[in-house]
Image (cartoon, rainbow, N blue to C red; front, top):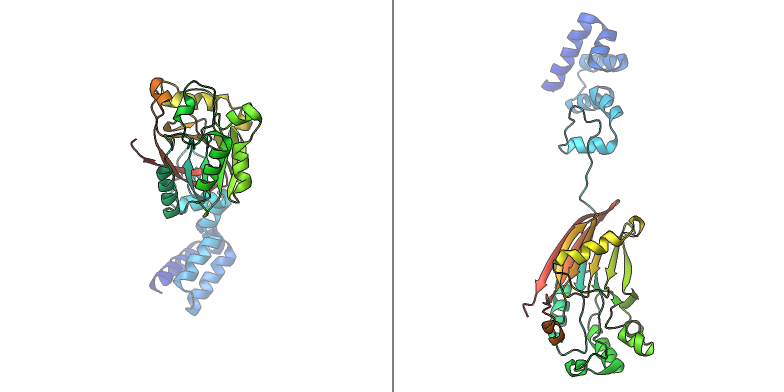
Length: 325
């Protein structure tokens, strides 16, 4: 009460000195508000909260509210500063709807260097971390090429054997959807006899979804796009170079908000042209063919956390789980 009495007495002193109209101009409030202040002071019923409310509605803060938008006022209230020469307060929100994604690629099911134990370890961690869905960026199966000696690297020979083994393995995951594209190894069956092995795995499992040949898009809360991509090119000396050239090749209207690539068995994250871009290693270990070509394999899986705001991805966080094969 002491605060409100002091404040109102200061106003009364000013009114007695210069009059209601001049006092209202000096204080930046209306003469009606002056009248109410004097009435409250006379009756002794004006509380501190009422003083603050009236000042917000009718005083200097009302003038500020006429200059700035609600978002700008919230920014100021949260510590934003109004600097000379800057007309607007920058509003940057890092909040958004959270999505957690389990990321695998290049399982190469059917090759001797594939390990179902590694796949199941990834599944166990995905379950523990409660992922919303899993992505697979291609080369689900090893396929059957005409490369000399390739057949001796396989422990599951042919389309039917690799398909059934893949169905058995991915059928173990029942907690959330799996979204997959095919890769160049999967497409060996298309090229040899028109068989769509990843699409056939989709047909056999209710939560396994084939979303495209070599690439496919996933909508994130209707506000952002996540693209899965595989490719048929090769490794680059600098790990980031392949991803940089890929993002550079996309026209502005075709850019996703995030891209997860397979094929090279490398793990790397870059932020290029405002696209969160990563290559996500492999579940299959280094093959004898890769060793002969002096190509390393980053064996492991990822869990990524994405926050989606009104303008797309507001935060992106990647966690890599290496197997050190």
